[in-house]
Image (cartoon, rainbow, N blue to C red; front, side, top):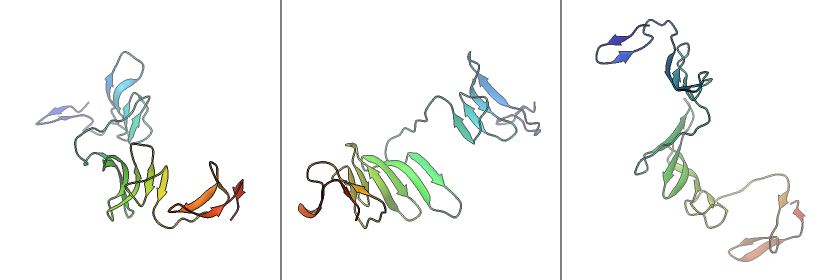
Length: 156
């Protein structure tokens, strides 16, 4: 099995593709490291990616803003999903931009960390297809001044 005790415990040091398992009373393993590729399974004995969690969730806990998830691809921007400024932030750490912010009241900000309404975009918007306006007035406003008013669908 290749177990060594020299300031560390090592499994599979002979490269024999030996799996490491921590079992439970159920048929799946609480923790499973697949010897052939190093994939780790929690709640599964057949992980199909680097970390595979079955029927569970991953919790990241701590004080401050240094905790979260990082998505990094060589040669591309690095994105962090963290709690910055009281809400979930998608942060581009490559160039220091907060790309998107979700506050605790259900508002989403793009280009702002203080969204005033459900979707608050600060900057230019481009789109194609239909714009469907519903609600009182069906209008597009700027600082309370109606710019476009319509009923039904606006195909502008």
